[in-house]
Length: 459
Image (cartoon, rainbow, N blue to C red; front, top):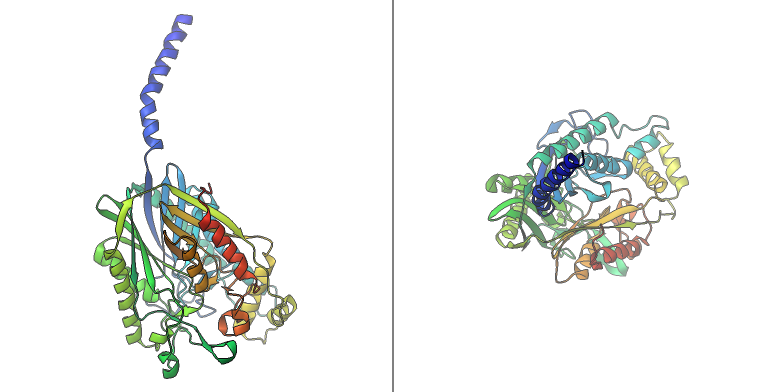
């Protein structure tokens, strides 16, 4: 009996020795990437575009595109959605379903809207508040929302069968000419004049581009000489002409698709801190202007690809930090003001919805917003919420001047615009659309500094 047990033990030990190299190989397999894409266009007459406009025509499908990174069993997801915005629990819904599908934690999933205005802006919490009132606007179709997130999750899960190794990472920068311009032009008295996403006033169009970040940044994951995916980051409001019943991925979607067709390489586009940056100086709402803007953005993407330099893929790190913002309490923004608006069926429908989004954000204020950084070697990809002003992107770059820093904003849009403190005294549109206090600048900069100045793996 002892003799038989001895032979079994020896056999198990020998099998273990043979298995060890395979296990070690799995541990040292290196990073892998998979791409996914899902059509997230609302049906005609269904879930509305911003704010309550039902879809009548689909000029161009709205897509959710992204990547799954696998680093020896740890998985991370980056996803860009051709929607105007996702707020509060609706944003959480996307991340939760993606995380389950990818077999990872919600904290390792970054979802960002490209922010086209020919697309939905969705806050399910606001709709639930409105549904308690008389004659509520039909702002969110929950059945559609549940279905579209199920389809996206299925696309993410299916992509895991296509995980493939990458051993090089490339970075390229290029200046984008005559696309972005400031929306806040300084005038006398410490105030600003607004030049929005489109403009037909010749005097406004003649004014300076103002403070922008003109550089488009492209990150490429490759295996040997073969590029597997390119991630593009650029800061401008992406809409050309809008406000009708047309679903459309607009300028960034057109440019992204053109480059993908030319190269045969999967392309993802993220919008940076464009809260106060738009295309108004170069956009008169005409189709010709849209075509020209698309050509110029596409040229910037091509130039960034041409400038790409590769290094060996380094260690993947993912760091997170909680962002705690305070709700506005100034006149016109108190909870009493907002409740009065949503309870008034005669109030403008968009104003009722905006009031509901402010209450919805206030209701979740005790829960922090997660900000994160994906670091691969000296490449830092910063993930921020809200319609953050360009100041935050410029501030982020200063934290790591020797590194390649790319910024994606328009994560959780619960807070709406995240503005500088000074902007509240300067006036203009952006502070009026902010749901958080002027102290948001200090809070967000503290989080950015913490994420980018850390050298430790947040895992």
